[in-house]
Length: 307
Image (tube, rainbow, N blue to C red; front, top):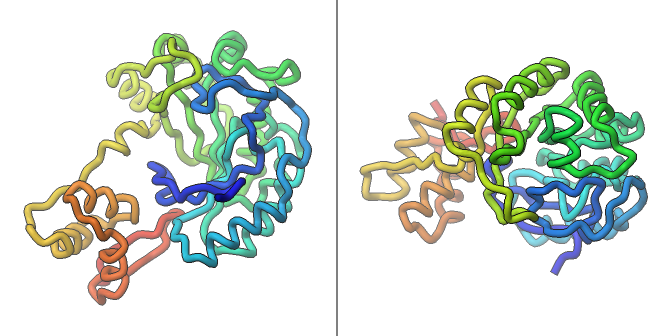
């Protein structure tokens, strides 16, 4: 069993994602009310070596050598990854192991630091969070370390937008009664105009949160936020199911791809819905099929018609 590498897991945004946890044991500088990891064992703002870089790389290399299939690497784990002081070294060495895209999922709290922006410069996709719309909501929802004022978080998002050369996929975790009301919507709309990002995702607490009082907003509220802010609701992504009347699973899939190119996770969902038990066998057939071409598009492995 690996200590720092897990998965691959099915990600609604990233396909099959091989997870990397450079900061373990629930060590974080936030104590978010919706956190799925439970109680944070150590609240810290200190950047240090939480896990040996070589040990992480050995596990990633072992997974690759054993033929573990994945669409990309996701640096996230059991704490805030930006707290790892050798994150830049880790990213550079991961780049030497694979040509798959590297995503970094973070609360964004330390992006105001120049050394952090330098460490993440080679990441392909940066996924920071912005759950709060003012100082009071920041304190209630994220419960930050005492040395992390809300203004610094906003400063960091602005600096990242100016300096980071990869994709920035911003996420807002909407919580019923906390940040899903009209006042919050107006405030988010103003805040989002202050910095650059490429996509906005609207998430909800779909996994058991730290506190039982944390609930998902209504579908109507999520839809309103999505329309006003121009964001993508992750719930909508997970609900998308492709179907076909063709009885043969492979023929049905090829017919669908010819009209609508799919990435691997969509193919997997399609086959699982049809109770097909050999997804990898279908993938292998697609990759050998002259009617299908495999292309890398927007950091996804896509299956599209060859002509």
